[in-house]
Image (cartoon, rainbow, N blue to C red; front, side):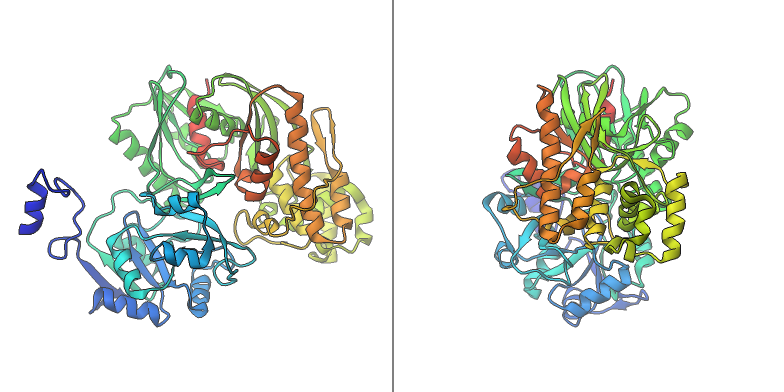
Length: 574
């Protein structure tokens, strides 16, 4: 430390007494600027700002990893970033200098203002004042956050304009945290603004939104993690929970508390699996934790489940059903110790019958669950390909209604295939080849988006639901017909009416209303507290409508509705 910092650090009366992070000009972190070939460039921060203004893309080191940054007011820069990062339509987060700049871009209420200004400095999803197709194509939401390091502040003060600040990583890989990792992305950035402050644990930016004044965390990471959650009972054994395959988090449980890790991400690459392992090692080391029991998802092919079997052979391993874990996570956060009606709507999760669940109504407590209702099954044509291509889901639903008569239909969905493809998919559907059954509400969203020609192929997860939000009209209050029979919710009549609807706004609004009507109908059958979880409840319109209809519905406020809350639910299953 320099003389001045030494005096502050050792003086008990100074506000910087024993303050570990030092941002001093003389003895604080040193900043260096490089070009994409690794050559040192003179000028550091001022030169970096100059290059941003000239339209270049910079990689800038933060506290949890690197951001890829460009001028948010320069469409050419944004397009260059999209092309290089291969991210054609997924929205970008925007970092702004201060609240005043944020208020020029978005409508911000008092509670959202508090979130923006909070010490966690999350990305907050807000209603944009003017849609910007470069930043967030096809949607009117914008993700804004304020600077949370001195380096960010210095850059934004001098730039005096918003910047794109997106995680420096490739799809399905963790955020880059050192020079070795960031230089693998040198084909994306033009310049690298680095510093010599080592990042031990990578941590992405947290993402939150407010729905009916309730906090919904979409990604619980920097500023929010790790978190300790107190349980309504004591655990019998020290438990390590390995989470799901997407939006993975891990958790350790002992006595009457659970420590939940930061967001790890999708376990779909070698790098992400290594990051997953590092998080297990770090969390168990920091808490000097030695597990007595291992818990993982029921899906045998999840990387987290395979890791459990391969690395913890001497431990008892408990497999917890995915949607049950969703509900248990919220129950644990809210310290509910009684039976509830849990509604778990998501993309896919391995069901007890070997099918892919995702539209589930469960009566459950910490010891057991009963599946009292679910969406009728439909096929995912081509298996995992259907998750990326809504047109395949819609086609399956149309085959369920029209069978061979579909070949004479002229719809947005059928036009998305060649005649040969339609014949091939009909054979797949008829014989059930590579076409697993699902009850997923997430996939139902995809199918409806295809029928109304909103989205035929996804470029990012959840795109269909986000785009469908734009069509919702609160003045349309009707819903489509549905039937509840033998524990199944029959909805094919709704699909037929959506297909034949003249107006897409009417179709989408009535679709949302129908989901709410289904939830309300099942809820009224049971005199139990209602708990909502699953990635579909990240949809602002749907969640808002359910909370309007059933104000007592319980959601997680500290854990995400997506699979980021699964590990907490796994820990508490008895």
